[in-house]
Image (cartoon, rainbow, N blue to C red; front, side, top):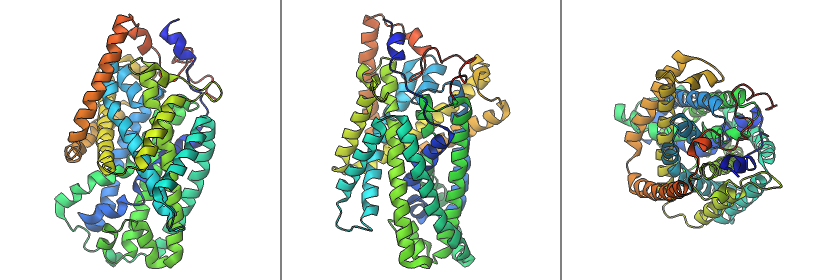
Length: 466
């Protein structure tokens, strides 16, 4: 039996609709940025962090459009791995781009789970944050185990309540803004302004997470670009409004810069204890939704590598009952759970995650430019055609992500380089085994991870998605 025939039995089910994909982008990102980054990033630039949010958002939108366009060509699991490997017809570049992201996803899940535990302590001070985080990981592990349909329903519910909790903060906050609090606007000059760009871009770090689940989204040529671009637009709006409020109601920005919970600090300024409660609920929802999305997305990379036979084949096995890659999910759950009880080095792991995300964003943007500038026939398979727009977003995405990499690499290379070296050894071992078994790599690359072979045809791709 060929590798393609085996993989057809391990494909994923398209159960996620447009709302589920949008909620994956928005709710899966807010916990990583909104409840801390908007405050702490101001330490170098003051209230002008509002402007940094806008510029970071424009870069994020360009990257989201790049991912959305590539997703219509390759609506597969693991997003950037599929885009890069299939465009350049080689498994190695896609593997290198996504290998470090796998570590970042597992570490991010642990950190966000601990964040959930810390917000829970607002209501139950005696609760152990690590145990609470482990409990959350366990519940969401079970939810993801039953398939993407269960994930979509639960994430949509969390998304609705999360947006409501943020609106409750923003609407009365806008009525209490004092414009005098924005002065001085720039406190650190140009260097301080640029210095805030990396931590603030981390607030948009999940904009392409829906691409990881491309094999499970219905009508992907329509819903994936809408989810990524639309979700990013919602994030920009929420971040701008929230930053306008928190810097407008607090008279001294350094209070926010030094606060572990800047939104709660701002809410207390005009809402008292009620504000603390509202933001704590929002924090619980935001961290829970981010853990949920990262868990669902993070399992797709080892699944896709295994699909392409550069990783243990068990990681591409799917549950007979639920159709989920249970070994990939179990590995992420076990590692992330262990990291919640061993916090040493997690902050550096998150820095690695940010660094590796930027590498992936730059790589996908360069891939867009390659498809456009070489006249590749792949462009004809895209769900929409906007060569001038995509040329601009490709350049902005590549240059912008590359520029942020020059700021983000510090403290990351000491972990990133050896981790990539390990990945290259793993890839080399499975590549060599494939050579010995005369694996048909060309046939594998003619499929999409997670997608049945009879679906991967541009002429019929959208026919059965609904």
